[in-house]
Length: 176
Length: 151
Image (cartoon, rainbow over all chains, first blue to last red; front, side, top):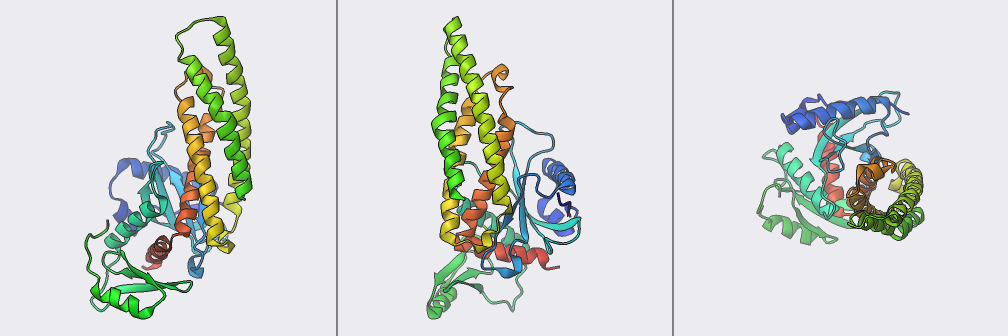
């Protein structure tokens, strides 16, 4: 049982979650559980295949309002960055994203992509010298994401197609 | 790994769910007779054994899933596994919904809270695997992770 310190007092994270009393209480309870064993509370390590810098370093937990054990309880999911998963205990985890669990009929990737986009729009400060879009290589494909709305501009194996799509992209809805 | 999930899914879909639906219907019957009470009792006992079996198997499966290094898997294999988990979660949620319609005196002997927590955990794992196989999600997640590292 590996103990883990979840840094919920982290200023960036606190600025993100605001004053939701239920959420804060749930986080406190989660923090206490993880201090005993990081595998409690529906733990899972996001594989991050294709991103060696983050492979198995993004940990995820579910939690609910403190003390609420009803079958219809609302709940949240939390992602945290763990720089060194094999470090001496307690393992340090920096939470960076928390969101309401989707309902049972949700489309998981679409829902999570929307949450991630909203998070990035609210947290990423793009400087004036930054490129309009950022590109990532995924296998033989280039995925271009807008640096403002974080929508996918294009996925293509052809660089000239990517360049054209980036030039003509216009943000329609920020963070949706 | 998909095989134990499918075995669990068969157990839930073909045994636990029909029995739970059956007992829910029996208990909502307005008829009052010893035969009905006896039937309810027998199904309740069978469900206690069945739910306990599901909970034990599920705990083992979840333990294996949380220890596995999926970064070595193909996206196709992850997707197959995620879909198998989705089916199990759907059937089990429906079963639990029927179980929660029943009176406390029946439910109290079943490990429903444990099963609910396990279903939520499996749902979270499936969500992660689905996200992993979606190129847009992968890209957004890596940028989000990068943000957590930037001071």
